[in-house]
Amino acid sequence: MTDDVGNLILERLRRLDDRMTNMQDEFQSLKTRVAALDEHMVGMIISLSGINTRLDKFDERMIRIERRLDLTDAR
Image 1 (cartoon, rainbow, N blue to C red):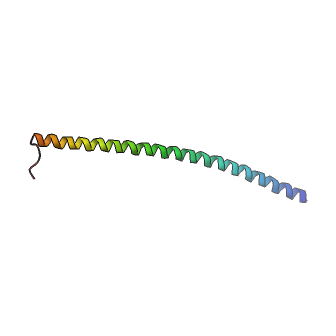
Image 2 (image 1 turned 90 degrees about the vertical axis):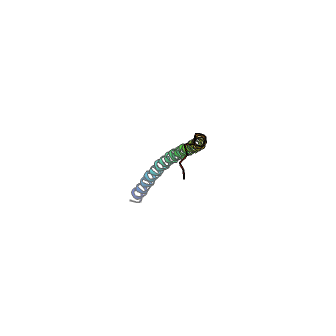
Image 3 (image 1 turned 180 degrees about the vertical axis):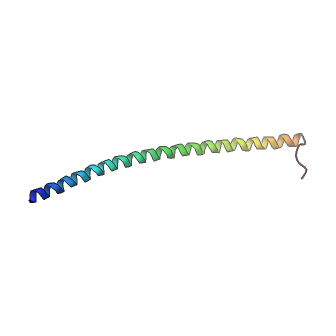
């Protein structure tokens, strides 16, 4: 009787250990995916910053061109 209870407990503990191992593997996979998303997001932010800088330069050039051609609105 005690052996049966001991075996049942041991079997349950092994199942729990297996499930914990699976959860750890899945968690590691999720951490890897989140890290990849983070790197991708950083790259997008850097690209967006570069685009904004270029747009600012185009805006400055457009203002200079309008001023030279007297195309500015009378305010």
